[in-house]
Amino acid sequence: MSVRTSHRGRLLLALTTALTGVVAVASPAVADPGGTPVPAAPLAAAFDTAAARYDVPRDLLVALGYAESRLDMHASAPSAAGGYGLMHLANNPGVRTLDEAAALTRLSPGALRTAPAANVLGAAAVLRSYADQAGLSATARDDVNGWYAALARYGGAHDPSVARLYADTVYDLLRVGFTSARGETVVGRPVAPRRGGLERAAVLGGVGTLSTDYGPAAWAPASTSNYTVASRPGSHPVNRIVIHMTQGAYAGAISWFQNPAAKASAHYTFRSSDGAVTQSVREKDIAWHAGNWTYNTESIGIEHEGYVDNAAWFTDAMYRASAALTRSLATKYGIPKDRAHIIGHREVPGATHTDPGPNWNWTYYLQLVNGITGIGSGTVNTESANLNVRSGPGASYPVVGSVADGATAAIYCQAVGSAVTGPYGTTAIWNRIGTNRYVSDAYLLTGYDGYIPNVPRC
Ligand SMILES: [Zn+2]
Image (cartoon, rainbow, N blue to C red; front, side, top):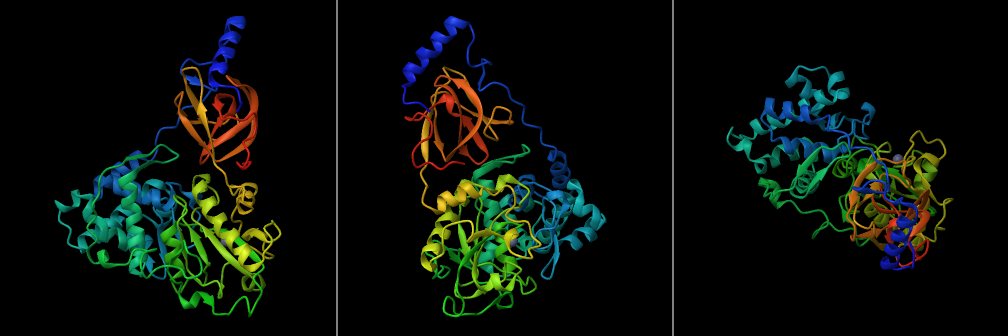
């Protein structure tokens, strides 16, 4: 906030402090007072045990779980493809990892579905059995780069490009590193996976795998058992866009639409981490996504990677990339850019699904669709301490990190939350600087008093 300079802010604070003896920053270490510690990683022991018992690289297991579920059990509810738990052990026509895990571990399918430690153990057992069948020696098992074929098989995709996408996703996580919401951390390191036969598989989005309907999209066609050929908009009007969550991971959703048993598909699917998009059904054809024939025939279905019950999947990158497609579709088909025509799956008459669910931010999405797409920035000014980053727009939300005094923060959107007093006065505006990451505007020099023009309200 504030058009006042950082220098003047420091003077004001110094004056306030001198007069009252009270500093706006309650803690000498952290600005925006309060905060709760990040909980310890409860899954650590489960991964230790599974990695040791089946001699699978521990970080490979963690990365696989992070790719599949962000290490979330989803209350043991199945994914769209019939997968369970943080490792997505699945039984469906094409994938039998749950049954295989039960046979290998002698744990019950119920335990494998519902108990996190059993779920991880089961996935490790299946991966090890695949590695053994691929002839991986005890020495070779120590090298994470040798597990590519086992990993690709675990994903269950039959299309080589999608199998490659699945395994590459896990190795990309190992290369970049990550920390889950529950604190499980994998430190990034160089990786050089040995892809074997999949080295020759086309990379989705590369030559030969591009959408002809939408430039940024890759093309990975759904099984012809999962959609209806048509010639829209000649055969049927296209008057709605239906927003979904996949209830599964990106490669898994694309793969599921290629499985003739799915009896489901969508036109487009977006990836959470970076907003990448893959098209599975041509726009002229009717995807089976809404559970309502009239709505299917007259709409475009857009899937988003993730689960309705975990906010970690709902990233700015995905919102912005999806809104760009929806904006383009609305213009192409003359669809009004409003909530009557851009709807959630749950709003379809007769819907039994709840997606995209309460974590989907409609206000933000519609602003982006309507062209309010700016990203602002601000300079952190706390006078010395680090500034608390909170999971929501208010001082009562948990602290999820910090930014250093003097750092520059990208501002994706601005929200009203609890009032905070800092170097730039008292304000209730909070700035979203990442997915579920907010800082008070009282500590940010943005060049504006209050809202920044062209930056959306959250
Ligand atoms: Zn849906």
